Amino acid sequence: MPTLPSLYLARSHSLFVWLLPALLLFSRAIADLTVVLVGLVFLVRSYRQKDWEWLSRRWFQLALVFWAYLLLVNLPASVLPQESLKNVLSFIRWPLFAMALAYWLLAKPTQQWILLKGLLLTCLFVILDTGWQYFYGVDWFGIERFNEERLTGPFRNPVPGTLMLRVWFIALFAVLFWQWFYRRPDRLVVSVPLLLFIAMSFTFITGERMALLLLLLGGMVVLIALMVEAKTYRPQLLFCVAAMLLAASLVLVLDPDMTQRSVVSIGEKLDDFAASDYGRVFGAAWKVWQAHFWLGTGLDNYPVVCEQMQVLTAKRAHCTHPHNLYLELGAETGLTGVLLFICLLLAIYWMALKPLIHARAWLHLSLSLSVLTVSFWPLMGGISPLSNWVAALVWFGVGWALAVSAIPMRVPSQQRVDSVG
Image (cartoon, rainbow, N blue to C red; front, side):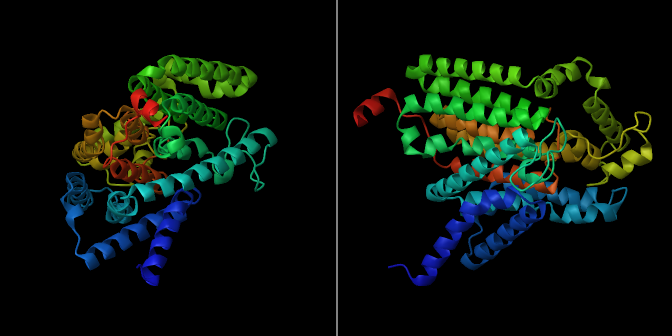
């Protein structure tokens, strides 16, 4: 019979998992504190139980190699070592957080389902609060929209699309965990397009173009996978996708100003990318990288070096961050750092996706692939995944993808559904 302390610990563990999405989403400081505390508790737990088996995971070993490069090579070569020191020392908290999720906090399906329920409620709150701000100009807490084209929702910054992009595809795992969906493929082919439409409509009204584009690409991958796996229900799925496209067209017509911002302007920027704001920022990052090609300027040194080189002065722009993960890594850690980081990512993808490919769990595979790729896609622009707030959600996604890979989930066949009755 469980003792009182063990029951208390179990309930505390479940409550923390339930609250984890909110802890990571709504405050930069709380998100970073959560990441650090989870990592420290995980290390203490490993020490007490003498359980260090997780250190044998190839992807984590590569994370340690990348960290060692930052400490022993990149930091001494930094243009401003004092600016790099804090971020270099603390980088390991991100992969350690992901390992703690995969190996401890979310290691059991019951804990994964608890997290999903907390995430679904969190997503519902953000959708309703941001929708209220879209229609009335202020959200439930009196926070005003950023401007006519951008919303803040409950985040106080114009980043709701960017932040929620990191959790939409995790939330979609509910269709595989929730038996009401999972045991009925006919319900799956209706619910998945509907949930994607809700996510895309939300991202559309935020005015965040890159988040909308990445969500659209991930959604296409998920729908193709569902079409492959739920073969019997392809006509119904095609009908639902057509209905989703029709509804999306109606949304575009009803708000022409936001359509211009979120959709039309994407084509305009791509038509003359080099002269666009993204093109100018990417070009500046490439110039900084070229000047420090092999070892980089040092972690977190890009803004200072960019200003010193005056690569954006003629364009009357400021150096903030390169808006691209790989250009940022190149400028700050050099080609050596980029290659080491890519090796780390390949190991993460391999561990997260290999069991799903072998099991032919295509919907599960597409969701995990999307969770990872919306953050690590090479052409992605936007807030840096190395920035505290976004990085917490990025490595949350890594931990989730690794945790759920242990049990591949396939859509039930038509024969199984008939037998269940």
